[in-house]
Length: 251
Length: 206
Image (cartoon, rainbow over the protein chains, first blue to last red):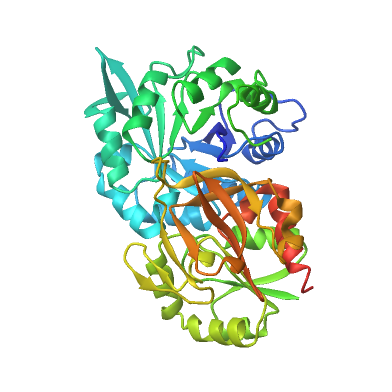
């Protein structure tokens, strides 16, 4: 049976993990490669690296990081952040990334999704969508949630699927950082209206939140950062708990 | 022994090479016929569309050398993901095209009666088909491997199928015919168990 995926997300700047990471048995908590190895060892099904480097130098460092991760970790990983062209994707995939995640650049130029899917295959194109519930309407936001758009989450998600995305990573800005649980109502609606896998993101605080997003939110995968980085929820404990709830996981 | 990993512009060949290196095998990433002739084992990886994959094999002039080495000379061959699908008689991504025809069958879009998600993406457990070939694969029964694909291989001859995977419908996950080993999942992305499967196959020839 296909299992539900647990995906730690690492924020990267200039080749280093940012945001607090507090991991036991780790020589250097800022080194994304070390962290990736630990996660792979401790039951993560996939990894997402979100790169927020703004400079060209930072982008070069990212490639070095991707090469090292590919060399030392053999679970699939996705790289996102500032990707806006075929050339950007080409170098990341050549360096060993399995998938790329695009967000703002897809909203600005939706044809990019078609171009990437045609050139590299849908399986490596993840479209990340950040949205906020404004008076009952889920509206897409850009640039880390700072810029509102006129796009409705569900319309945009359907367009993204039609254009060839292989997966959607949906972050609810209302839930992100709250540790109050995932946006399960919107997630369930996405799952019902779409045929590609949906990754839930934003709001993880307890094991129960993961159970809920798989059962109520019908998510295919759940992504989180701080609860994993600070060891609040060990991934293996989480998976044992999910298994007890009859949610299929890889153990 | 030397393993020739075929480079034909379909996805990342480097991660396959890294895994082979970790297992202690010598390999080269190549699209030169001479390298392929000199190798002891041929590995065809790949992700992307069937049609583009065949076009690229043709463009690099690799079809003749594969026919000669794999079909005629029976050199051991491993196909992974698209590298398995291209062995079929026909593919359909995005339109119907001829494949290598090393294993009779057609690659078709996953069309589940329950409308399950496509791609079939994530970790799923292998079912080892019980036949004369199953001894090799037995340790991997019910083990989870990483899959990511939207099309699946419908094999004509049941005896070519050695592994299946359940995703509402029972799909082919592994094929074996003589010297040809093929898998839909990604052993190079499936941690220790993936490495062990590759080692199990390759060590028969080492």
